[in-house]
Image (cartoon, rainbow, N blue to C red; front, top):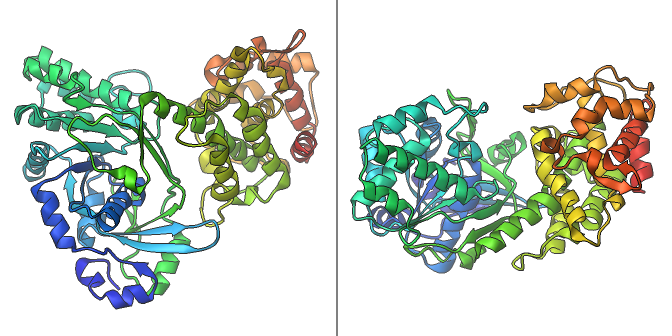
Length: 546
């Protein structure tokens, strides 16, 4: 069994192994898409193949759509060269369900794969042709939040951006520069309308994309490299829109166990490829069954009717409420709590943590008891039902190879949004008491204990990468298990960290919980319990949640 158009032509072999094959003429869809493209996507990674490409396939099969989509990759060209084109742009989606069942589908909706390389005349010319097409309705993106940034971690402008600002749209080097160059081609073709839709997992993603695009246009106009009308075109929402969106689907790196399963089916050429840019790609992608995509309905040139396959189109305010529901309460905080305590208790799979009654009670309490009271119901997704799915279906899914170590990455950057926003909401409510928050401070204390890089058995472990790791660890230096300083001394040692609102979202030393006590006092008391010795993390967690 070979993943190619010729290979899947032997349909009986594939179907006997339980694969769903595209129920349409691949060549016919590809031809129609190239003639009148409606949707191009930037970012050829796993989430795209598991989500957007599958949506397009469902539109063709279930709704009679005549065209597929086009994908362009601008970071790592080898993904296209080695993982798309050799397979005739086909891929395999393996959906791992919580009930133990598995669905295997060959995805054929990708009509064309392109390389976003301005130095490659043929590739860049083809992309300009696509952007000059009147039929093109939207460009979507999964290029990560960093893809929209014009500065590095120190706030300095990236050299390629500086060069592109001065040189203009002819042959830009940067990813965003190349995208804006394509928009300039669309402007030159008659200022044609289009929606530029970030579907990256970051808050207010449309604004991030818009800011980057407009910055290029301003620089090019000021430097005489583009018509003044180009900037006006990009700032006219009836011409170019930048909708907000919320996306949610867990799509881990292709897993060895899935590769082994496909190999037993007789599938050839499954070996993952490590590109020269260290990207890990395979001809298959494994993903959970749950998925959410909520998009602000602002499409000046129309759009595919993706609501027929589960996409929710709504207002910007509703997108924002859905985003906050997910990130601040119903998913991300629960993941971070499991990540911190999972690492401390020696777990290597998130799903296994949900078999632990103490950890299960911890996240149930954070979600249902402490978080849910401050959630604004977005109306399009019920918050309680969302948490129900997260805790009863998604996180316990034994087939999803996700780890607490991966989720613990950049924890210092996640705490202010995932927990700080809930604390702020309690303080602003007028009727809720921040002193009733017991488990969120316990997560903060757990993170302080995590910074010591010693697990509950007293063994050292390697903390996940975090830009503030070394700085934060300085505040727990000198502490050891079984040697617990007095409350005031420990609080004084930790005060510079606990008062850092950039890390916790609020100054914990000024967050009142009872009388003269602050949330910092609660965190210090919890941390002292976790420091008591070997097994103290388990005992404290059990006592607090049961």
